[in-house]
Amino acid sequence: MNFDKICILGLGYIGLPTASTFASKGVKVLGVDVDAQVVETLRSGKLHIHEPGLREMYKSALESGNFSLSTEPQAADAFLIAVPTPFYDDRTGDYQGRSFKLADMRAVSSAAEAIVPFLRKGNLVVLESTSPPRTTVELVAPILARSGLKPGRDFFLAYSPERVLPGRILRELIENARVIGGITPASAQAGADLYAMFVKGEIVQTDATTAEMVKLMENTYRDINIAIANEFSRLADRFGVDIWEAVSLANRHPRVKILSPGPGVGGHCISVDPWFFVESAPELSPLISTARRVNDAQPHYVVELIKRALCGSDFPQAALKGKRIAALGLAYKPDVDDLRESPAIDVVRLLGQEGAQVKAWEPFKPDARLQDIEMAASLEDALQAAELVVLLVAHSEFLTIKPIELASRTGARVVMDAVNGWKSAEWQDAGFRVVRLGVGTKH
Ligand code: SAJ
Image (cartoon, rainbow, N blue to C red):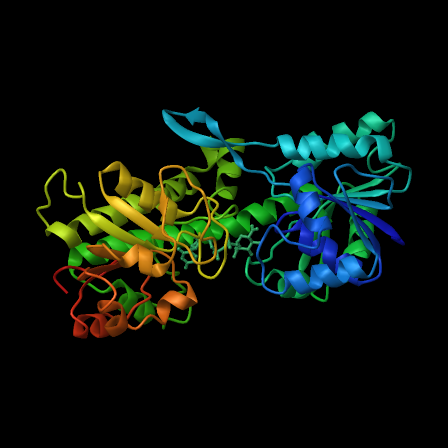
């Protein structure tokens, strides 16, 4: 199948790199976003997101004349839906007294509805957004059928999960293996033809529901493995063991690969996707929901450690009241500007709720406006009056901070390292007391 024009709905972390990549291959691309501000920003040649290499790639796509922008779709050979599928903030499900989060699929429904007037015989529609199992057949296909065309007979319909790692999106988009699940084999083939335009990794065809489940399994697998690492960190703390040393020793076993503990699991993928299984079949997913709860509880554990760092093991009820804390990093993981579902933000908010005066410094988003969070104007500003410095994200620029230099810029003499980013000995030599996540007090 040939594709001269592609319409991509959703110009976020996945849609924009994908659209730019197609345009760079000489295809006419119409990028669509419902947010007029995003379209305006992009039209002026600027980006609303940060991803290494994207600025240059987007600029050349725009200059080539292949990339145009709109808030509404137009007729095309293929339509690609890459809109967010977050969960509801204000609605939850319940199974045997335990609540679980519910996927908000409104953006997918609206995108499919927006395509209906432009859908023609022989078109291909691909859903990329991470979705609960059976979304393609049970939500998207019926909406598209309102066009009068029959999915799978008159047009092709497929689900293809994106699997790229934020921070390495442009490379992984091309190099990773791609799963394409069609509602019919011919739909899978049409999807494979589309992605073959730039994907160098293997392209594997399957059915739509399998492809949806594969995506959720990948991220759930990772979430559960991080949950056990986080639980190990608490056990290590109890038993006076250094978790980082213990993990590296356990990982010398040829069939063991324990991930890293940290302040919790964030981002719009791993902390969200496992709930899609729980929502779809809570009675079949007790392990998955427990792992989610373990990871969601990790910011509370970090706060406990901060109290201990400031006041010792028998900390009083109001241990944090009036304490001045510098929080380094708010992003959900190192070297990205993405703050979605970030556990670092949870830690800062929890500290604030307990009366601490926290100043947060996020070098990738210094002007972020977040409810109940005071942003520092610079690292200097965050440190100035602090009593304790907490490292919440292992951004490269934080890891190269020299303790001896920092000592002269802050009155703080206690540091709490939640990500194993700093070498304790160097900090101790510079006069700091160091508390690390997962390192027992007996150690
Ligand atoms: N994290 C840990 N310990 C670890 C690894 C990660 O605490 O050992 C934390 C991170 O700090 C972060 C969260 O987990 O808060 C998730 O980060 P990540 O780097 O594991 O993954 P994401 O969310 O950036 O991207 C994931 C990837 N999925 C897998 O690796 C299975 C990516 O390939 C997917 O495309 C992406 O989700 C997605 O969009 O679904």
